[in-house]
Length: 431
Ligand code: EPU
Image: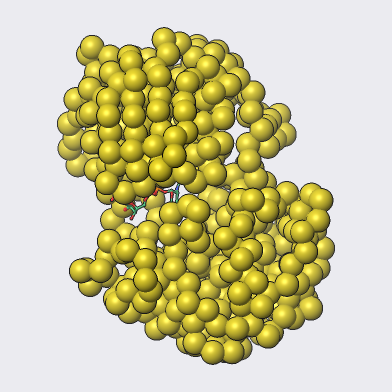
């Protein structure tokens, strides 16, 4: 599927942020921990929740959708093997904990995900092993069992990984005894997952210094939860609003607290926004200052925000740098933006001060963006979800026609994006 975009149009109006992809998918997995009904509100209708639905149904979940509310009920685990799904993503590994807790064994496929680096799962496996799981694997599958059930343990994550933190929590809430997890990730989506689990009856304490304490309970109950707004969608729409003079986009449901670091960054480059009840308005301009940016774990500048933001940086007067410290290979999209007229050079040096795991590696994890470069339409194949939204923003501010191929990647995380952009005045056609 493709988008044909005629860029260079002023965009105005309201766009509403949907429920968070990276919270919704984890809550669907959390619902597997109970035999009772769970209700999720503000549920996003996107590729990745569709795929997670497929996974849950394979395990035995009855799934009902009514608008943006879904009901999940897994009265029994019918199947401990998640066989090949219609597409690979990172979610199946998170099903290990619920399956081990409820059925004592689990088989999940080897993961896929974005083309942004090797994305290993060693931290996940180490945590599960510490909780008592025995895990084997071959080319296609992980085979796990916990014949005597999972047991609480003291776990120190070597990096505050989002997925490994979630996996450890999802496994420890029903494990016997206490678990202490050190060096956890504290992204808002994880906190939202913890709130949902608390409603289900879990006991999870948030300590200081990235420590989580969990007291395993014997059983969890059903619960109802309103999924937090997607802060990646909010940032994408914000960048679109800011990137073109005359634009004025109100991002409804954008939450100031979850966007604190992003909003500070916008001020630093001279961007304008106004925080109102129910959302934030972003105003387009062409007078931006360059910046030295580094991505980091929360509460730092999020890695998923650098791609849409890089479009803004192509419009500043001067040279900006981005040092990516979370993923080693997240600048593939720069090549495509250069085809549209951007001037982005990707280098292997650490262009920043933050501690970086990639310092001694040759991976291309810093970018030098020289502006201001007008962008012009081009034909582009989407590489991954966040690169895809960056291309779409670039196409919308570029002069002329762009054809964006591989729109399915964008659909993984952005619901009905073309229709919502049309409401702002965008000239975009899905073919
Ligand atoms: N890592 C390891 N070993 C592990 C786990 C992670 O080395 O066992 C490394 C990764 O390779 C990466 C870093 O640790 O270099 C951080 O990975 P993390 O585990 O934090 O990421 P994730 O859980 O796989 C989630 C989001 C990503 C988001 C990151 C960082 C989901 C489904 N995905 O990934 O979102 O970029 O956290 O915040 O929640 C997206 O939505 O487009 C997306 C990629």
